[in-house]
Length: 568
Image (cartoon, rainbow, N blue to C red):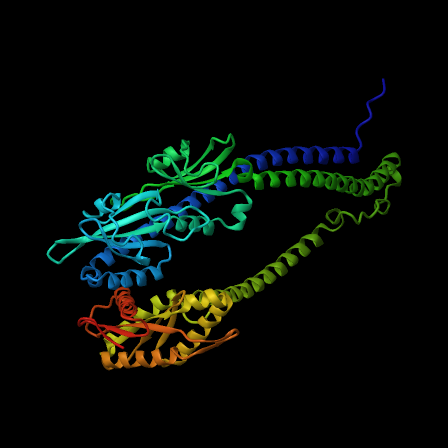
């Protein structure tokens, strides 16, 4: 009986390599399928939840601003002392121009008749049947989303029907006597605009949608097929219970969506409205990247398997060839041991280990030392490069990319140092808060490129108008701050502010022609003996700037430790 023929080494190597590749590819595909889907689900859930949070926060901020504006207007002397409808109307219309989403602002007398309103709309009309009138007599409150009842036919025709959120509050004398109710009708177009701004082209391409739902389940903002219709979904139920998160659920259209949810107005008083904000995306769109990645990995594994199989076959031939020569020589020596000579063993160049082990080890040590020296040099060079790059990045973090001026971060680092120096040398410092008058009109009519150029020229003119010991910074938009040091008194700060006002009010040359914008400057003085509170000092300058705007813009308003005063 003949002995079984053993497998050839080349066949064993190729077979083992193919089996290893197949098992590895199968395990890799299984892991990719599991973790890619889970990772994509987590990423999509987080993305939709964050989108819901962003919309919720934007809605809350606007409602809070409207409540603040109602409180501000109802307590302002111009409104409380209003007797003439024309004078009151002018105050309201001036305020409305700064907030285009306020479709209507009006003052109703205690008997329910409108004394004055923007555009003269509803003046002398009886509004005591409106819910906002009754609620607004007690405190500042917000009335939920509703169609236009009285203003629908009076306001300009729009693409979408007029819908409002009403915010109203009482107007009282100093002794508490009610003079009337002030109301703001906030156009629902504001919410539509917020949703459009948050939905980037990439999100729209993957079918992301933002839906706002009232507490009774009626859709206030969303796709047309469910707009102003009631819905009942798991995400809505969770949101109305005050939760935030993401769920996978089936909607009335029969499709499965991943939906992020949150609730507006949480932890707020009656002026905060409770709306569920849902951000949804179909399951297929949410996991599209994972499925695409899965397909790519499948093709990659197939290609890699073929390449590795071919490489294994070539490697097997390379390994087996010298072994065949060596085995033949050994067989010859086995058949004729008396004739065996070391010279008859061939020199195998393919395996340095069998040829010169000691030389290989010495070369290995030398090579390791050379590699270590090279790595140390590379590490030292890398540390220098990283340090230089870190310094560059730190400089970028402290600079406004548009104007090149220091940004808010740099200002908030430099301001405490300036206040500390003022305390040490015993000379006051001051903060100038500057806001451009008319920049939005230039930006809207001339375009953003010329608007950016105007900001750059404004910043350069501002920088050239101060001393080297002073600091000019850009906060955001068209807001700038100047820190003045080594002043003599409040008059010194005021004089420097007027000099800047004259310089900054001169015309600016842009690509489309010359433009002229004004600037309102608020000045806050920091005396050496005063507590060093940078945020409070900046807030005082900001308030002084708003005082300058309210008194006609293009002015300097000064506030210090003593009561505020204004110069023009």
